Length: 561
Image 1: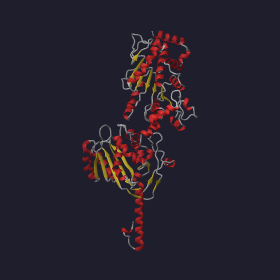
Image 2: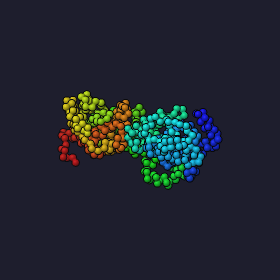
Image 3: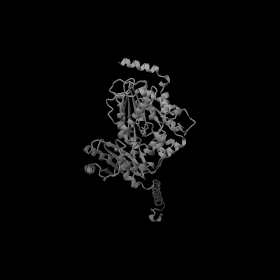
Image 4: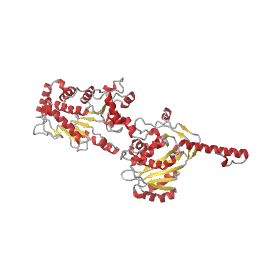
């Protein structure tokens, strides 16, 4: 029986017009049947990529180009060439997958060239699962549609179409993105060996998008933008930009597919979506979108070598982001920031040094889940904060953990300890006080927060970092990189958004925010004014020494204005 089917398929293919074997020609017929204008060059280019020999491919094209319709026609073409193929359509929602399958069915039922594929009465013929007439009996239907959260295990397919499996609803947080990444790995178990193909269609939601990581798994990505990108944007796309766009260098900012969207239409969409939304949906450029979505940047920090060991701090330290400051960073320092983010060294460090105005230590006790007991030590001088110690400890409220926290406070000469009491109803404070009194007596206070954690952290750290008042040590960055990625401070810093649950773990960044909040009120005064006050004090002391040396006595305080 199988030999007969193989013979019949080969016979039908020999009788078929050779021009019809090219999917671009078939697409033309589909568009004519649907009373649509002829496919555009961009649509033909997408069609050509679909019929390439790439077994794992990713198609990223601007909204409205018709990539789902093109791929639906491609499914019909695949069944026309080989009715024995099993095709699985997966989308973020089951409804979207069903819409894809329904449109495919409509083409089969209505296009004369495909009507021999209409399912027989004894075959599956629902919108979520249907066979084509020439297909032999099989556990797997000719076409099946599923949501990404459906039961993928047990399915079998020659071709998997992953149509917008990543959406805003399933990629807001790192945990969601991790779950999605693990789910799509199931495709490799579903696909048939040797002959199987997997095709992703979609728009990335963030810089950490699933689509941006698929190349690491052997996928080849092509991008079609709505506008010809600038030279700077072209560099950001790397080799992913389709040649039909990358080969054109004299049309920057002009529409790539004017038959679909002209310049005025795209300007209206830019106004409607906003710059970040437009760059995401129509330019497939995650860089600008992430620049707006992730407010905390490594570039806003001041990296000063050895500052964790300073007993005094410079009276003035200035930030800059020039070439020299970037080159001044040790090249061995790991940069976990997003694309285009980088560390910088100070522009200027004054020769005068002064004692720190205080040392605060925050403690964020382990709550629910896998978070650890995190701590951060911030010293302050003239409105500038120096991160001298930060980390996370296992053990919850154990004696060893409490003693280690007390030892850290003693080593850093901490004046004030701030403990978050949201979990445990103050138990951590009650347990820590006697241990701290024995090892390093100091002031201990509790804080309780009733606003969303992510917003609180960003609202505290963003103004401090935007004004470049947070100094970190090179060695702190290196030690932080040794931790498991989700627990790294600088990864948490650059990946946090205002979305609830944006990070899988936020232990260290939360501790930093708590310590920073302690100093916020003291940092209200202008740094420059504070520095000037310090200079005035030094001048007065010099004047006092001069008067005492010259006239034999110190001047009266009320003689000076």
